[in-house]
Length: 299
Image (tube, rainbow, N blue to C red; front, side, top):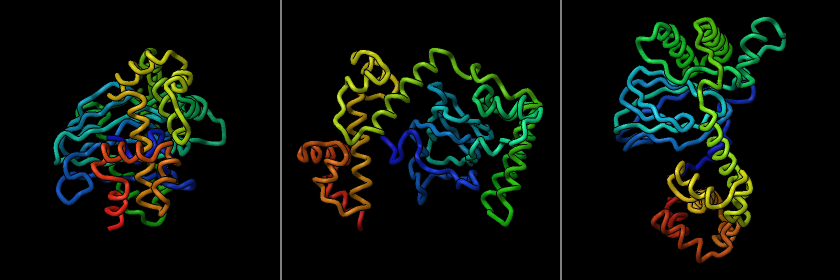
C-alpha cells in the first residue's frame, strides 16, 4: 500500500546540472505494472507534466479527484499533493519532470518580474488539466511531444533544446491566460488540510527511528490526538499509528534487501523496540517473516 519512497520524494528527477527527465509508462503483462498503474499520494518540488496516451486514470490533486481520459494533459505544480491510479491493466502515459528553476533568469527584466518570479514564488500556477478540444490544446500537445522525444532520445545537446522548448511552453501558458493565481487552484480549507497532512507525514519520515506517540504527531500540527486520528484516517484510510508501522516496515524492507545487517539491528534502526513485535507486524504486512523476505530478495 505504501511506496518505497518517502511521500516527500527524496529522489532526484534528473541531475543538478540537468534537472529534467522524461518517462514512459506502460501497464500489462511483462511490465513493472502487470495489474494496473499506481503511485501513492506524494509531493515533490519538481513540476510534473503527464500526457495520457491510452486508457483511463483517476488523478488526485490536492485531495480532489479527477478522471483522466486519452489525450488529457495534467499539470502538477511544485509541492502539490498528488496520486495517480490506472483504471485497468492496459494504460499508457508519458511524464516530463523538471525543476522549476529551469525557467529562472538572473536578470530582472519585465518577463522575469511579471511571470517567472511570481511562478517560482508559487503565486502563479499552471491549470490542473488541459483536455482535447481546448483552444490551446494543440500547441501544448505539440511542445510536450517535442520535449519528451528529445529527453528520451538523449542525443547530444538534448538538455538545452528541452530547456528552450520548456520556455516556449511557459510563454504559451502566460500569453494564453493559463497561468492562474495559485489560490484559485485550492480552497483555503483544503490547503489547511494538505498542510497538516504534509506536516504529519514529514514528522514520521524524519523521526521514524525514534519512539513516536500520538501526542508527538498531534503536537506537530498542533491539535488534540482525537482530532488527529479522525483527520488522518479520512485522508490516508488508516490510523496514524498504522501508517507509521507500515512506513517503518518499508524502511526495513530496504535494509533487508540491500544490507547484511542483523534482523535485530534492522528492527531497532526502524523504530521497533521489540524484535518479536517487529517480526509479527512484518509477517502480517508482507505475508512472510523478515528472514524469508531477505532470502527471496537475494534469489
